[in-house]
Image (cartoon, rainbow, N blue to C red; front, top):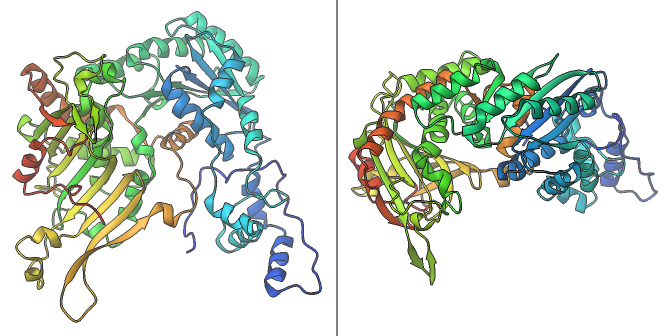
Length: 586
């Protein structure tokens, strides 16, 4: 199936070969087959001008450089996500030609020690389709054939390989990584960092990106020091801030005010990595570019929408951090609410970042503040299964024994506007559940006067169409429909029209951090959270969070590895909803 539209930020991963180079031609033999003749002909064709321009990614004329400083470089997030994402972008040819990566942390470390630490987490992405083709010696043929027919811009190694040596790429990347040790609240240490950055920028226009991979209580100190002592003198300076963005409306507003003492709003990139996930990005494409969905996207046809997040493990050492926030702040107020806003927004004027964020803010401002009656909370307890004993949340040594922090929450939210009036948006998020998943489930209304209702018995929910967007794992989009089972009788069955990404697309899906880092470098703000959007989100959850804490509401306990507390089912039943993830999807 051909690619209809392509809008890549960057070319496919490059090799060391110069633009325009092609695989060597194969001399024809006397007994060549028609297929071999086609192969030789394709290999001998000089790529079109457009192909060489895009593949070349020639930026030698650029007089600027990008310096990326990972503040908190010795932490887990930096090691497991940020550095691997930066390498993946480099491997795919997405980073500017002139770039430098600096690690900054309090730990004493040399450049060599940083490189050794980073190298342990780097991997090279493999194109499964390319590997399959190469195993038959047909990689060069299919690559050029696709490039000619479908405009796919793949660069080829002179010997036909799609990727140059992975080890070489790692070495080249690590050579651009450096380290500077310093305190997060020391302007002098950031001034020393500034000197090192200038040495590598070598008089070019300097663009600087700071990624704050540090605890929120030291955000402001780091921003103040970076802004005053190591901002770019002649280019742009941007700062990526990780969640949590406060604990409630007041602390979030205070954080925003403090940040804006040193930065403008367009310099602040509040990252929610769920917005960078492939299926979340595809949400607006699915809705706004397919005629069959947009007319159905309203209260007239949709009965309820479910946003589900489940992890099959507990806090596992993060209990100290988690106990200060809980599952509502950690997952629902940001990840799930952001997906809800994207799902429910009106058609934006354009794909411009501000137009999209304007529509998201309208949705959030149209929502009712969450009430305690519309919330069910739980906390996992110890459970023995198959001879293995799993710990309770309070068994974590970093968690107080009398902690009432919820590890599970379900909530019913409503949007009071013309499109969604009366439609329950149900959220559910929890740890230590029976499986791991993140998905959006759209349950449509029953067919009026359904001719086949007697075939479904008294439970018409069995006949409900359902659209499922599985964000992780095993990314997929599928639509549940009713159809006749082949045979002489009239027996109906539920089947899935399934788009399984692993089966449809050969390339590995990029990590969310890759997309978001690239967007920050390019100044694309569409997937980052604006301050008024953050204010609107906190206004929905702050009242119920305060009520839970002030009244010391005891969570319902559920066994580790179960489906969660029963209260979540009572909450859904109140709105005549059945959780869609209870039934096993075939």
